[in-house]
Amino acid sequence: MSTQGRGHSVLWFSLSGLLVVCAMLAGVMIGPAGPTWWRVPLELMNRLPFISIDSGVSKVDWNIVWMIRAPRVVLAAIVGATLSVSGASYQGVFRNPLVDPYLLGVASGAGLGATLVFAFRGNQPSTWWIDPLPLASFCGALVAVFITYTVGTSFGRSRSTVTLVLAGVAVTSLATAIQTFILQRNNDVIRQVFSWVLGRLSSATWGDVRLVLPYVVISTVVLLLHRRLLDVLRVGDDEATALGTNIRRVRLTIVLAATLGTASVVAVSGLIGFVGIIVPHAVRLIAGSSYRKVLPLSVLLGAAFLVAADIPSRVLADPAEIPIGVVTAFFGAPFFLILLHTRKNES
Amino acid sequence: MSTLGFCELTISYDGVCAVNSFNNILHSGEWLCLIGPNGAGKSSVLRAAAGLVKYSGSVAIDQKEIPTTSARWRAQHIAYVPQTPLMPEDMSVYEYVLLGRNPYIKHFASESAHDKLVIEKVLTRLDLTRFSYRLVGTLSGGERQRLVIARALAQEAPVLLLDEPTAALDIGHQQHALELVDTLRRENGLTVVSAMHDLTLAGLYADRLVLMHQGVCVASGSAQSVLRSEILAEFYGVSARVHHEPDGTVVVIPQRSTSN
Image 1 (tube, rainbow over the protein chains, first blue to last red):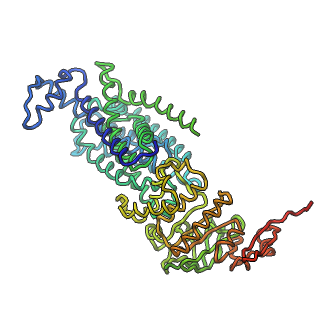
Image 2: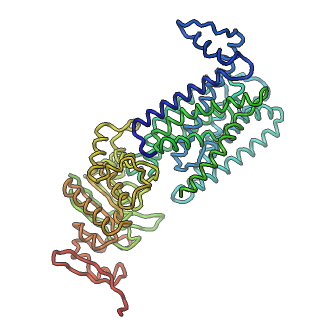
Image 3: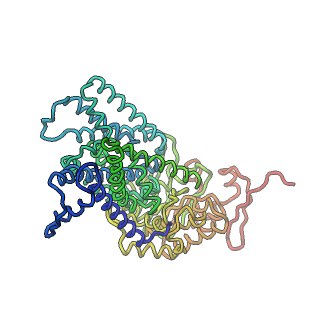
């Protein structure tokens, strides 16, 4: 398993890429209402230039595929990829395999930011020329991570991961408490906020995709560029410095980029648990622990995983929807327990 | 050719003085060994040279003050092997040695063909080629020590700082590791500064010994002049016999206080 040469890498990358394509195809083919599933790929081909196939898909059916399923699938891919690559980066930068984006308070900070927007805006539709929701989530997330990071690293000479996790827990509770307080004062927006918290993939539009795309692209590109430096950070602060790395700058850049990515997807999709922790770990199990493989593979497999998890979430309880967070946790929690169990047996 | 100079080096941690007015100059190909009891400040001197602690006074390599240089420049000129290196268990041997090329690889770039060549050479030199794809966690103590030295060599730096390079090794591996450093010093003109606890080995390999006590340099010179039983008794609080072999080797043997 440890003898992964170049050939293995190519294999894993092609397999993961194929998985993403399959999951996305399945995602646009399957769903309540709409055309018969096998007609969808035919119609997709028909839409390509120079190809004409009579797929028998009506205009209404096509709208269901293109305006409802497609943006949802694309958004799921974006969210899955971003949460996974951010999670892997956080784990690298804090040298703790159990850190996930939400553990550091990113999610609760983003939630608080979003709640503030809902509370101040009330039930009026936004009159701003730019939607303040992702911006507010991002600022909330940034403040939360900043506090966690400052408090969690200020005690003792070495950064104790235990202090860091405790600081994350404290910041999460504080942000949740403030959020609850604001909600109590603004009963009228509770419904909006909770539908946001439970995940919004179900109401995804191309607008959501456009809104989140610039942030996510910047964040993912920056993180992928740091994949080699994340390997250098694995030997600890002193040695990484002695190996010629400006660790303070590298760490800050990675935390900022991962926070930007996480916060922006949380803003459009709400809280989707476990993706940021199980996908990177699954990647490590199959392809080794080097971040040069873990980061790009996390992008691909994260996208595939969330697109795939979204399918049962809209099919199983038809006509209702199971929140996507429930599905990911349903698969994620047992996986995580198995992982912990095998780790324990190894040591 | 590189010269490493310490001038009035003073280091304090939270107001407590760890090193006080340390002076020394090393030229290319010299091996200086810092000895002294635990907490004497040996590691702090090495950490200052590696740019890892704040200090007053001067530490300079080719007249360039350490804090004024970039981390990248330092890593190209000084390779530092800490006492207990943090070695990720699930990293492969090749990946670990690759870390040594970090100072030469641009921030967002990957290793070049030249970097790969250097790694191949280092792995061959240290007899680690067959371990290339093994995980660090599966190596023995001696193999790990070779691996850390391999990473330091991949840095192609003219100065090598070793903090207790033989602490966790058996007598055979101790000798092997030190022989290796000695050969490299002779072949490549490496300047070596090491901190060591084994006085006999320190005297055997180093050109000069510096005995530190409570942050102060209390004796320095050849093994014959520093390793004397009255000096060891005073600063280590040890009663030891010092034996001079015909070939000039100085052997330090601790003495039992009550004899049967």
